[in-house]
Image (cartoon, rainbow, N blue to C red; front, side, top):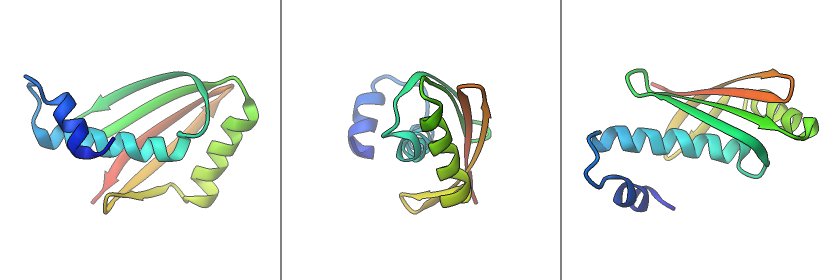
Length: 107
């Protein structure tokens, strides 16, 4: 799904601005490109539109996959992801089988 399809499906009587929807989509796609091929058992997302932050808390059944995601973020991406010409900073913290990602755009 691209931005246009996402907006078309989301912006039906929606009270948020299109800019907020695009920001949410871009933040979500940045997270998806980081953990998209890993299987998380539980995912909870919280959006703070005022500060343009997306927080994701995911639980993995497999500790190796969790470590792979953490290593990828810290050692390959160096906590930064570029997508759609926008740079995002990604903070990752783990606790047991959980990883919490905080994603915000760098200006």
